[in-house]
Image 1 (cartoon, rainbow, N blue to C red):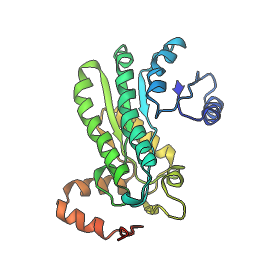
Image 2: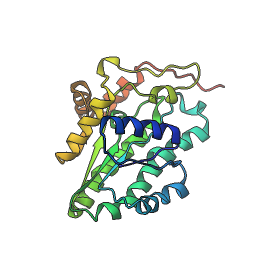
Image 3: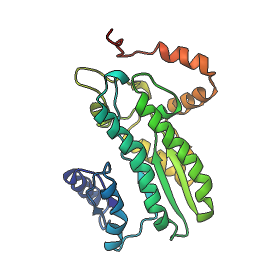
Length: 238
């Protein structure tokens, strides 16, 4: 197993926790700034140098930015796009040749329930996750002849650090607490869906039914609902 993220100390903490739970598990920590194309491009070679050929790619890294679009800092929006879209696409492209060397392999792309609908004040994040879900659907078809399963994991709210990093100072990211599922539940649902060859996973009954409703609602009705959801929006200055 190889873990990669920007902060080496957090990788080591996670690796230590996994080793304690699963003695004998081999874990390689590969610190990498996934927003950097150069650092991403080096990852397959770093795996090869360790004698490690992955048969499962989990694209889990993601960033959010909650607040009005016109008040957002462009560097932050650019980072969201770089990690949620560019990095995920690039990593998939980089690792497919390695995945093809196995008789059976898989890709689990972490999307979001947010990808099912345009969300005011969360516009770039929701759009980026719509990209992830649609890319996953297309790659399922392309990669099937290679024995590579591809699944989109689309969770609702979960108690992680995502909310703290997505919200701006002085603002609060509204969440549907009644739909929350633990990270362990979300991970388990995603891996089960991948193993079963399903195209997506929406962990929890509320999230699953919400996803189905969103796909059935006429666009004008959906716009009306979204225009009345709790928001932090402020009008443009004259």
